[in-house]
Length: 216
Ligand SMILES: [Zn+2]
Image 1 (cartoon, rainbow, N blue to C red):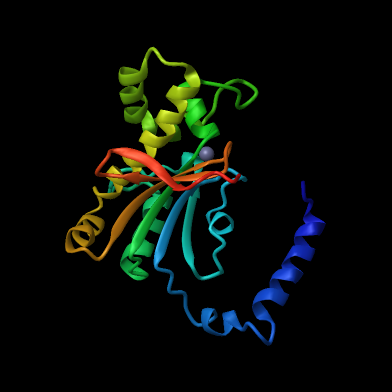
Image 2 (cartoon, helix red, strand yellow):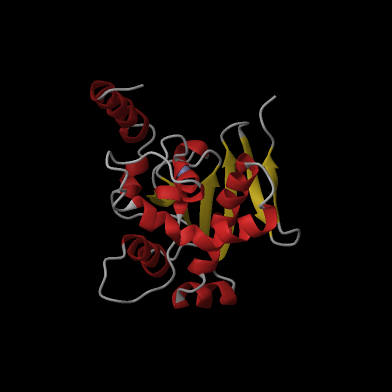
């Protein structure tokens, strides 16, 4: 695993790649960003959406949080970091796609399914409350797959919670308006980090289907 010194060397390589005479990508990007895609992904160190999709700076506007969850539209006096970033992407950047990218072996969903680990006194002050956003997904899974092994239930909950995030996105009036007008599309992807495959949700079949097969 890398330490901070290697991050500095990494930044030097980044400069060479993106600020050098031949690329000049940042000649444009320093003036403004025009990403077409908002990616909502998990904080997990294994699922960086830009790395996974080989994107350049400026390609993706990214929100990352525990278990790639989106809260429902809730205009009140509280601080809403995810909603603020969603609003910026939709209303200021006019993104054309919102891609919620979940993944297998998600620690956030695992802790929702089965309380594990955490702070020394066993009291997670923020995580439990945060992942409870996906409680409806958990309940559906337990109802439908209550007799199945834990791994199957967790995988199903990882996928169901992605769809719940899409539902919650549609509670934002600006998003619903744009989706109905056909100027914004919501997509659900699932990265299987165990096999290396990428799945995409097909609303017609109601299933996550293989978009990129696992490597041979
Ligand atoms: Zn995760």
